Image 1 (cartoon, rainbow, N blue to C red):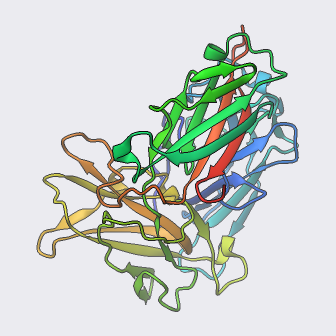
Image 2: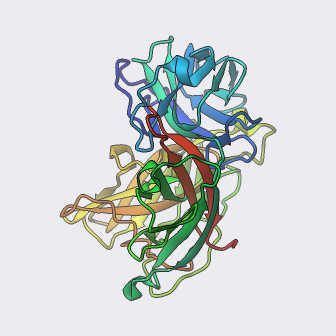
Length: 410
């Protein structure tokens, strides 16, 4: 089951992306809590943990570095020496070979900052992994956030001001206090990004406050930060390949592992139904082993969906953090008109996975997260608030505030 890498010479995108077909199970989070948002405080003991598997089965000379970016993920006009201390790149030396698995792989890990690479400035950083010290041979990229906390943020989740959306949407009202920061023009120097469940494509950038009162900026205009609540994520559990778990119809084990999931149907119904989820996250695990990092196996996961839409109207995708919510050929379903079903299979490591279905109509080509999943105000979601500040005359943006709020845990 060797997967061949893509062509070496590539240009990177400033997004969470994987550039080689043999790279799987990429995790990037604050090391203090598995699956957490990848934000750390500047000049603290916080670290980002990055891990991934290389399914080629042999070790490679992988290197990594970080690049400072602005709030819209464009490269800052800074040289690496201005935002990095110690070295400008480092080699990935922490790797282990898989043990007792059908699919052979090499597991890599690194924690950042460390004694070789550490940031001098707060802000957005793109973490880049590449081969042979050559950034023209990219392996993966991940967005991480380094915060120099200087602003106190308070926020609340309320129903939409639009009466027609009160049952489906969640509105975020917030304010923060910039006392102690020399802000010349709060209507121009401060920007605040609100993001749902760490999904960059489901976000709103506030470029101006609704009004200013002393050193407090208020963001509560009726037309801003109004998000469809969506639905709780679907999930499946493959921490064991010996027994069928919830949502698993059948497991096949031979020269490879295959897991057939139960057929899914549309959940865009009249009412909200409580289900516990991980807000789109996924967690690697193996109940039958000792160290899931190297003894969790891979299985070919078979999804099926009972069609309510046909390919003439658009395309169906399955998304979650396990595939960076990507809408590409590897996550697009094929349609079987004899069974009126959509089908897709993909290779995933053992664990617990959240996922959802996205419909992309041919008429708009814009992802529709509601048609097949529904949207409800009661849905439990995390919202991340990131406060960016560009001092007068500065060549970069600082990240001076970060807060996560939950719609249930007030």
